[in-house]
Length: 337
Image (tube, rainbow, N blue to C red):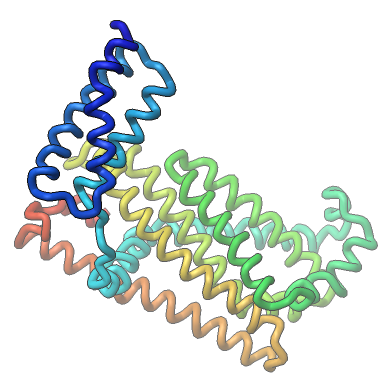
């Protein structure tokens, strides 16, 4: 195919489509013309890609096709009516249906951290094997751990904490499809927390450790466990898809719920960041700070298990008794998994 001749033959149609796609309010005739030209240019793009894939021309036609498609379909307005359903149904359901995975992740994480802490308490020389000197240990136990929560400006510290935790959660969610990387991420963090806990407890500073961890750590760690559980559930969906779905369908359904969970975890981790930045280092009595942390954590668990169980039951009834809003019943086998 002579590319120059092909371009010369169809350049007029491309320019016309570009002009029409930029109009805010095309007439009915122009809208019909735009749809026709969009179909033609999409065909031209396919021909160029398959026969003479010139990078510059492919990029130009791809941009033109995308802009025309956006003009034809129009921008989708934000449906604020979906927000209450998202908060009361979709989000707790995503967390609740992954509960077995994130509870198992929490149990394994805590067992590893407790074992490492007990090892460090029983063998004071162990931290030296990880490159820590006596000066490092003394600084961590008597100064660094406690000052970490108050040495920075609270809003900046909260943003830093939120960013760090969101990154860990994002890694767990993204790596969940491969399963093993999630275990490695949790293992690394369990070793770190277990090491610090062992040093603090072994040096008689266990009250400081648990007093500073509890206000934010309960919710923060639970959010990390949830992200790991949601990610692992996505990965397991293609390993064991169930009797009614193909591997692709099972993975797609779990991934959609995973995205819902990821959006919700942004808010959960933001709350944990606020607690760590403003409550943990505050001058409130220790028992009050810990009580705030336990209260927020309990509210989150109640949100997941009460609203999540209710949402799952409602969907099961809907799947059995009638179609969903799209007109098709959802597979009960996937919902119950």
